[in-house]
Amino acid sequence: MNWGYDDGRETVEAAAGPERFPLQLYQALVESTPLDGKVVLDASCGRGGGLHYLAVRHGPAAAIGLDFTGANIKLCQRSFGNSAAPISFRQGDAERMQGVEDGSVDVALSVEASHCYPRIDAFLATSARVLRPGGHLLWTDFVPTESVPELRAQLAPHFELVEDRDITPHVLAAMRADRGRRRDLVEQHSAPFLRPILLNFAAADDRCDTVERFTSGRFTYFMFKARRRDS
Ligand SMILES: C[S@@+](CC[C@H](N)C(=O)[O-])C[C@H]1O[C@@H](n2cnc3c(N)ncnc32)[C@H](O)[C@@H]1O
Image (cartoon, rainbow, N blue to C red; front, side):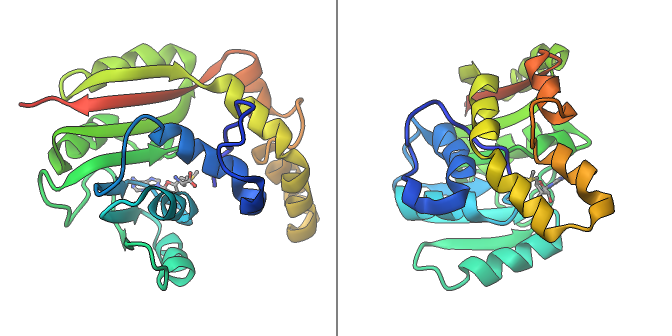
């Protein structure tokens, strides 16, 4: 459910199948942040594949997936409910994270979802609430390029930014590498009248708006890794 990441390395083995590039975005996000034995929370887990991949590959003590959409949570539970990995899913709002105890999380993630959050300040304050002091927020998404400094300013009261990257070229590379599969999915599974919209969303060629907004520089795909301040 994300556009993926490709920096030329095969950080997720090709054998992982068609979801390799979206999984590589999760993998790039956690690179340099050990998850072994930690409590990891994904504030918007979607269909759950990214979080499940991390739970299998990185050995956290617990991986908790939240998502606003009940149908996604049901799908996660069907897909991964019997997994041997220590993973669980519940419906929730990234701006409130109901039922998640203060200071109970070591690493919080948000992947290609915050553009849907009406209040980024609430998401950041809540992330700071559930993280232990020194815990990490790993956050990646796209925004209009002029909004990136404002996001940094919103982070600052709660978090120290330890890594700040523009990953737009790597997201574009993944869009290009994965476009044949996405085009086939749209063509096989959608009604003809919906295809133009879905092909645009799937970044199916360089002329569509989804791609053009990145190639033109209008939008930036950022990756922030931030440490919760002590107080
Ligand atoms: C593009 S999908 C990305 C899903 C997943 N992170 C991934 O990369 O595969 C965005 C997800 O954000 C979820 N979402 C949107 N607003 C949310 C909110 N306020 N709280 C929790 N999840 C939310 C949507 O339901 C959707 O599953």
